[in-house]
Image (cartoon, rainbow, N blue to C red; front, side, top):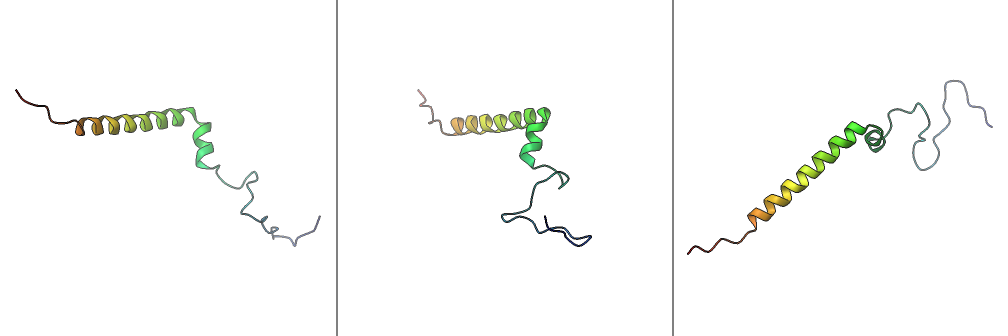
Length: 68
């Protein structure tokens, strides 16, 4: 193991920063999966938007009704 001067960190490994403990907050996906309430809220919002958009598209794409 090589010694580094005091106060200097070794260079990061090739391919980006290392994700060791204490490197900051976890990524958004991990925080979402770790919190069941955020996961529930995301599921409700995504499905609500999906079904609302689908319903509006269905209503707007109906042919005009023939009048007698």
